[in-house]
Image (cartoon, rainbow, N blue to C red):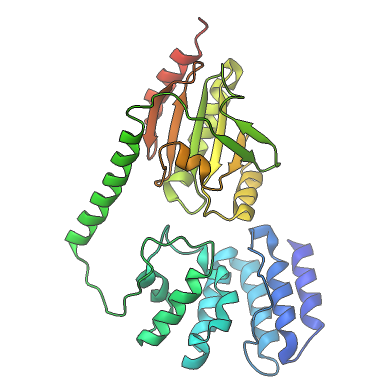
Length: 315
C-alpha cells in the first residue's frame, strides 16, 4: 500500500501542469493492488493548470482512506464537473473502465447513465457508445433510456421470467446429454486442463464472475466444501466468465487464496456446457463423466455434500 502510494506521488510531482494527464494515469495504475484495469491510452486532461494534479491527489487520498469504491466516486464527480460538450465527447471514454466494475451485473443503458444524472439524449447516447467500447461491460440492452422510470412490479416479473427461460433452455440443452462435454479450461497459470484429463475423478465445474453477488456469497462455502472432500479425491475448477477482467479474477484468487483450479473462459467452455449465461452455475461430474447435478444459483450445500459422499465412495 505504501509503495503504490509513493509511486503515485512521484508521478504527480513530475508534471504539475495541464499535461499532467500522464501523472493521473500513473497514479491510477499505481493502485493496481485493487486490481485496476490498465487503461489503453492516457486519458484527456481533466482541466487546466493545477486541476489534474489536484484530482489525482484527491484520488490517492480517498483510495488510501476508503479503498476502491472511492475511485468510482471521484470519477463520477469528475464527470459531473465537466461541461456538456466534454461529457458527450467520446475521447473521455478511457475513464469509463474506472466505473465499469462498480455497475450491476449486465447493466443496460439506463443503469449506465443513471450515476451521471444526465438528461439530454445526446449525453446518454454518448455514454452508451463509450460503454459499448468498454469490454468489461457486457450488455443485456444497449439502448439507453432518457425517461425517469417508475418502479413497476410487472417489469421485475418479466425480468424473472426471462432469467428462468434462459435457465430452462440451458437445462434442456443437457436433457439429452447427461455426459460431460469435451471442454478445455485455461488456468490463470496458462496451463490447460480438459474434461478428458479429469476422467476417472469426481469434480465440480463452477461458472462464476467477480461481478456476481451470489458467486461472491457462495465462494467461501465452495472453498469449505472442496477442503472437506479434497482428501477423498475431489477436483474443482472455478471458471470465470469471458466478460470478467482477468486482472480482477487473478486479484480475487490471490487475495482469497482459492485452493482449487481457477480458469478464464473465452466463452467456449460456457457454450459447451449448455450455453451457460447465468452465474453461478455449478456442475457435479462423477468418475464416469456423468453429470450428476446442475445447480443454477447457490447450491443446496447439504444436498451437495450427500452427492459428493456417494460419488467419492470407493467402488
